[in-house]
Image (cartoon, rainbow, N blue to C red):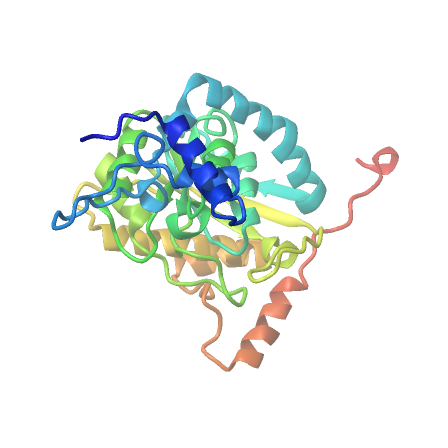
Amino acid sequence: MADRRTPATRVERALRSARDAGRRLPSPARAVRAVEFPLRAPSVPAGVEPPERKARLGAAYDTAWARSPAARLGRLALLEGVMRPVIRAVADPERRGYDRLVGLDGPAIFAANHLSHLDAGLLLTSLPEPWRHRAFAGAAADYFFDTRVKATMAALALNAIPIERTKVTRRSALLAADLIDDGWSMVIFPEGGRSPDGWGQPFRAGAAFLAVRCGVPVVPVHLEGTGRILPKGTSRLVPGTTRVTFGTPLRPSPDEDMRDLAARIEAAVTGLADEVAGDWYAARRRAHAGESPPLSGPDASAWRRAWALGDRRSHRRPARTPWPLRD
């Protein structure tokens, strides 16, 4: 015969039995957990294969809510009222290359090198209108979407979507492509992760694939200085200066293979890095000849690479002249 007692009656009976037996009374939460359905999911009968639990985080996290009108309004307030002032105070960015975006119309893919967790916020706050408030970021599913709190914050503040770093998944690619087709621009870091030593890593073909798939241009971007402010492996911010350099948009040709486009994107970001490190005219000549110093740095021992990177890090922008004396 089925047990017709209500869940509350069963909880009371469990408490009474424990008291009568002279045992320590269980906590109310433990007593509730001891009650079966409907206060908890029903058990699976013996001999029946339990259903597979659907993942709710990682690459399976649904970010559609982050593009609702209410979420977009909240993100606008965060971007303009919080992120831009914080980036200004911590990174003091100098932005170059806006003139190269003249004539760019519609959605685009902004592909940049990756040195720090500060990069996404710096790049998003540096995008000019109209792209700034209609852009989404590709974020690592295993890092930014491993807990519900981090996933919610990434989706709300950065309009981020989860991207698998270790493998190519159809879900992530289709979601990004659908958003681009709907008029959203994308911020992506083709290296797939932050640099471990300050030098660049080989670019993957994700940005190139989406550009070919959606027929949109790729804007190469070089970020400089974020690795000094918040390097990989630390959570301590050291305020400094940064540079954001936008390059000329690259449009995929009709018959271009995505691997060739990925190589062009990496070469364009490499040329921008050369511009920042030295003379603009000489850097453009080297880029035209395909002789820009590689982002990956010298093929040498760790100490030699750190020494060479120190030469780049020693670059500082000229001091600003106080306003009354400024031309």
